[in-house]
Amino acid sequence: MHFTVYRERRRASGWQLYQAVGVERGDREASALQAFENFRFFGAPHVAIITTDAVHGVYGAVDTGLYVGTFLLAARSLGLGAIPQAALASHSPLIRKHFDIPADRKILVGISFGFADTDHPANNYRTTRAPLNEVVTRIRE
Image 1 (tube, rainbow, N blue to C red):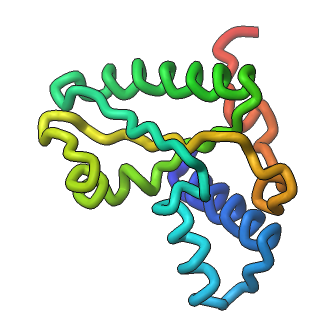
Image 2: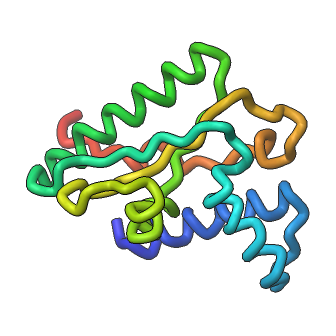
């Protein structure tokens, strides 16, 4: 599948969030304020910065992805809300400096977590999902 498909899905998800929280298309100030919420950890009281040893490359990322999935499921089972945040990794120099993370650690994602504000519109919208046949390739019938 071409990269454009993933970019379009990411954009669609972003617009769904903006609609949920009342950000109008073209409102640069409101969209910047919403994007800044990533760095306020969406109001969550806790953040986990997930790193891997840079020498592990893609395998470290795979292992870390499994850890992140387990973390999210565990949080949910305990009645906590949690959101993985790629934006924190995208701004890793800032995050690295603030949390004093050594240079040999690759920042992959952050996870903000705590008790969810179930009344907040961002916690009540759901993104659309691609059909299964678009994300799974069968190699045998």
